[in-house]
Amino acid sequence: MGTDAATEATDLDELRRAAGHCTACDLYRHATRTVFGEGPSDAQLMLIGEQPGDREDEEGRPFVGPAGRLLDRALEQAGIRRADVYLTNVVKHFAFEQRGARRIHRAPRAAEIRACRPWLDAELRVVRPDVLGLLGATAAQALLGRSFRITEHRGEVLEWEGYELVPTVHPSAVLRTPREQRHEAFDALVRDLTVLAGRVR
Ligand code: URA
Image 1 (cartoon, rainbow, N blue to C red):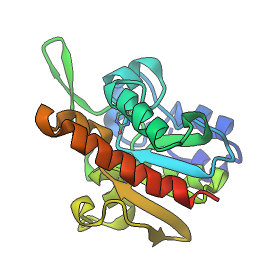
Image 2 (tube, rainbow, N blue to C red):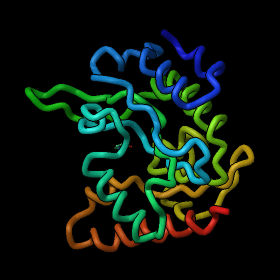
Image 3 (spheres, rainbow, N blue to C red):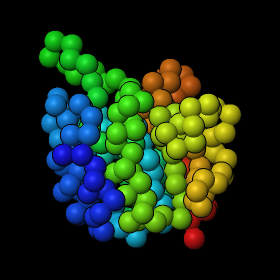
């Protein structure tokens, strides 16, 4: 099943159900399930990540693994309640390479991001948030173009297709930062999220 339902469905439940059968790219063959976005259908803030990881693939919910836990802490420090946010990803199946018993995350391919795009567009159409937070280069480049550099624009309030948006790093980039600088990297993420919080009306 492709993504036709993305343009037809009028609410999130319908979209989530339809996306659960999506075969628009090959990722569905190896992933356990579609991990659709979650959060209030009238959320003012939408956060967009890259793709579900191993944990998300198992649980069927976005941002519930290590990066999600770090994001939860950063949101709290920025004064944002996770329950108020619509959280989603540009790609809704886990992309990985199998190495022995382990599934190692791999970046989604351009064709996979393209194939999945109608679901993100549908989430935007239904939720109509005021502000978008783009977590990491994959999300930022999916919306703003391949030449967009997070390092040059993180924490800035930009405009895109009638939305205000703020790009920042992906929480997993904070997790990958060497221990001595991790605190600083976390604080910088909180600062960017605080900018986002300030744009919510
Ligand atoms: N990383 C993401 O980009 N999204 C998730 O849902 C989990 C980890």
